[in-house]
Length: 383
Image (cartoon, rainbow, N blue to C red; front, side):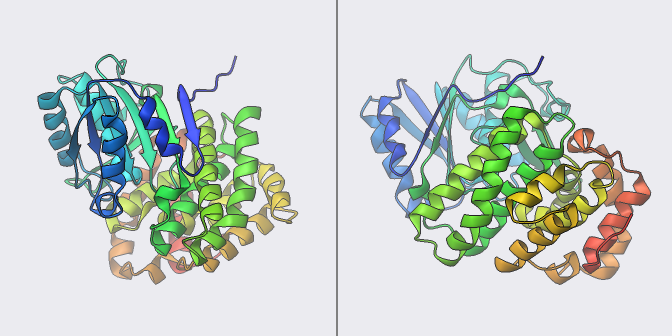
């Protein structure tokens, strides 16, 4: 028997933010990142829409990229004081991921967040508050997923929290919100969405429902990411990328991920490489590595007019280049001596990453190291 888990409600399209007028409740806490949502007036708009039903709003602002455990604890403290019955994750994936983790600790104050790193170990959520996710970036699909990534800065490791309890109750996917997204963020988030599709498609848990989402999303990303990157005000391309990201979220939340994310989490946590960029740097060689045990990349290649796993790897490299992604980890700016010094640490943690469990090929530490070194220098691997 299979299953397909999704939010109870999902609204999409330009102007869909207006759906907040229908929300019922008493008090809401909005969790958001830096200042972009305030500067663009989105926080004010969300508060105004909620106030039509006399919902009192409090804000927790300042969630940093790659949110930390400390930030999660601070936000949880506010929620325990305010006692909201609505939690809204508003902004980029970091804001929504942090809000999800805060939701866990708000509902279960005595729960040890460290235990949440064990997949599917989070207790029941939704007793105290419903969760609404409103993304401003088109990448993680976290508005519909069972995942949240929190960074342990003391140990330089990213920890994915995975539980179907983390799937939001309501998702609002409004392309107008991300019109102000900088081009490099458009690139990084868009490629993150692409990798979600790719990994879900070859995952050991792939299914016809996740496949359908991935196939359509891959086509939309290859068509629309260069357009949104080149012209940020192209709302049609923006909405297409927002929808593609959400579809990718549906796909990987149900089929899960693999080697790319397991490896990217480590170079992101240690060297500060943005998550989507880290995925993009690893993905082509991961396709080459996994293609020895799966022929499914050939099906994705046909979507972009290719005929083999290698042509698909090259299509990813071409797309990377079109949106100014470096050709290697070295070109990104990571010091060679430091990388070589830390590569065994990266390998060790990549093998422990929960995402590795559904990869179609079971790697050895030597193979992971070989992929890391090839991606560092921009070489093409051959296994």
